[in-house]
Length: 163
Image (cartoon, rainbow, N blue to C red; front, side, top):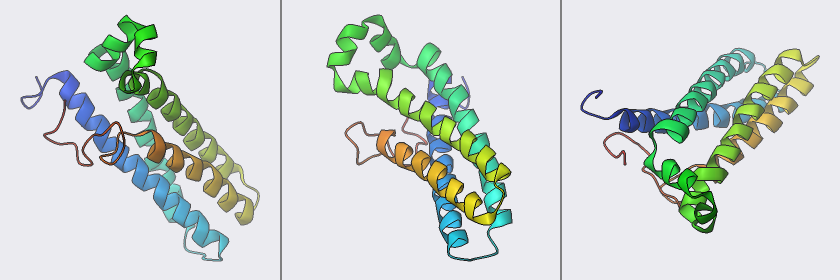
């Protein structure tokens, strides 16, 4: 046990915390891109640092997500035990298929966005790539994460609420 929590609870809370960090990074990068497209010249350093933080958060999310999916989550264990039945249950289907698929796409967008921003030949292309790829990542996070207001709800601040 870690801090009185099981591995599952600790990983779930870390995964939820990183969700907030990745969401904030993507939202900030969308704003940086918009400011850059409108002519602000002070966005490059902020964008580069935030892209690195987004990559870190996305990669850590992937590792924790895979551990949760395949080893520790009782929900995904139940879904994988009878995948046919899980597809008929909206909550199990969300955790077994929808959430993971969307988040793999988020990770792909973050990594592709990083490469395209780095390789951009000019500022216009840099900000357009940043807006497109981090904007798509942000939209997917907002659509496929268990926010308190979504049909598959989890608390916005995870600590003390694992379950």
